[in-house]
Image (cartoon, helix red, strand yellow):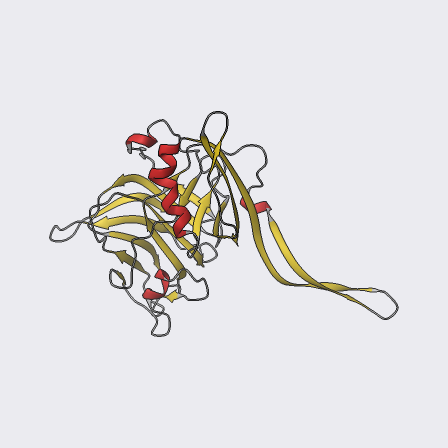
Length: 277
């Protein structure tokens, strides 16, 4: 799991100009759809359209092993000129296979020229990953994998504009990686001897306390996320610059209610979630 940041990133939105790269980020907006996503190759049983479904049991897989090694691309054609500043993936095998990943796009030149948005990197594991770059309008956006002859797979791809929370998280918060919950079955013999344990399910659980949020910022940026989170999961990184490895792919388990918090009239709420890391 990781937040991979462009080396020349700038927070360009006017109401983000006072925020830092260490403010919490949530990737919930997703411009990828069945009609605007494609891949260089796809296994017939694991088409690339699976990645626009937020469920993690559906996969895209490369359509076969290649020799010599080649680049594989997943490409999104944005539906409009709205700014985009992130790509995120979940339930993949790019880390364990050590497949390099790069975010960028081809221009309309002949032949097309590749422009890098987030430089090539090898992920440390197979957890959720967010690739972040300066917000900009794009006519094409690609995840470039390789060159490799291995069978890459990804279950979920998001791309769009990140929600940057205007307050950092300090006390009262468990980083997503450490909020592990396990359901286990313990075995004992008739004589009471311990026979071991079987983990039947493991996930992460977290509670994010938010406070002192300007009402205008809440209405402009956070309100739509709360509506969307009723149905769809999201990516979250609580301190992306200081702790870039602490990223979750989560869904909401409560109904966050924004409170007009006295005496200052700013907004407070709590986000409760479970997810995978």
